[in-house]
Image (tube, rainbow, N blue to C red; front, side, top):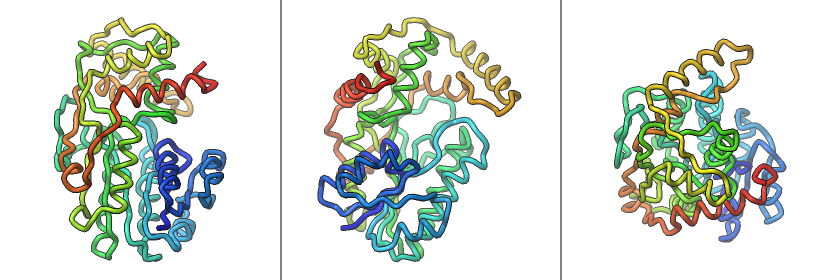
Amino acid sequence: MRILVTGASGFIGGRFARLALERGLDVRVSGRRAEGVEHLVRRGAQFIPGDLGDAELARRLCQGVEAVVHCAGAVGHWGLYQTFAQGNVVVTENVVEGCLKEHVRRLVHLSSPSIYFNGRSRMAIGEDQVPGRFANHYARTKFIAEQKVFGAQEFGLEVLALRPRFVIGAGDTSLLPRLVHLQRKGRLAIIGNGLNKVDFTSIHNLNEALYSAVFADGRALGQAYNISNGQPLPLWDVINYVLRQLQLPQVTRYRGYGLAYGLAALNEAACALWPGRPEPTLSRLAMQVMSRDFTLDISRASQYLGYQPTTSVWAALDEFCTWWKHQPSGR
């Protein structure tokens, strides 16, 4: 089978493309950074450079493939709506259009559980529990992109969407590295009581879910799936475990939620007025995420995709730490 993996220069897309190659699939990749896919090209992937914002390029990428695993997108919590709309909605529209015009059989779309977040603690969230309002532009545009994907079903495209939470493993350049850098600067503090539980997802488990989605039977189609390890853990215990593995000081300082939220609001206001609108080091959303319970119900993925997490959170954290120690920024 020939498949296309978009966003292959990133963490999730790159790791899945590598798995697909190892399992004998014919893989075509796209990505923003050519150097980010060199390791995949050496393993036999075909790389076609370009911007998925170009509809003609998206169509060319879809030529001759049976399935597309769409991992490309704009991420973050700060920036203009237009930026997120271009990176998530327009790009996904182009991929969907390319699939339809080139008669691709299946599209597996990487979405996000950020669409569920409403600033309050939520446990065992089901796929249908989407709030009426979204926390930020990222969440809103990821949900709109999902709807574009599901709308293509009426034209014959087989579609599925996966919503993985806090993906960890070797190659993560976002979640854990950001926290490590903050602690090195002495700017990390436990928000609230430090007991909030959240879900994590090993990249190995997500890879298996994506692979299953590519080959899933008809009863799995047309649905969104929560993906996690199904093992909620106290967020700050996990953060301190990583810091211990990296031989960094533990986070022991506490900051009340109200004070943290107020400081973040001031930081955001200052950044919004500053030329170039730099991303704030503190944000209200981050204070909420770091202090609230947030876990997913993964029973739908278990039932329809046969999803069973096999790599533990701790093993995924160890994998990240071993990899990070060998990075220039991790030394």
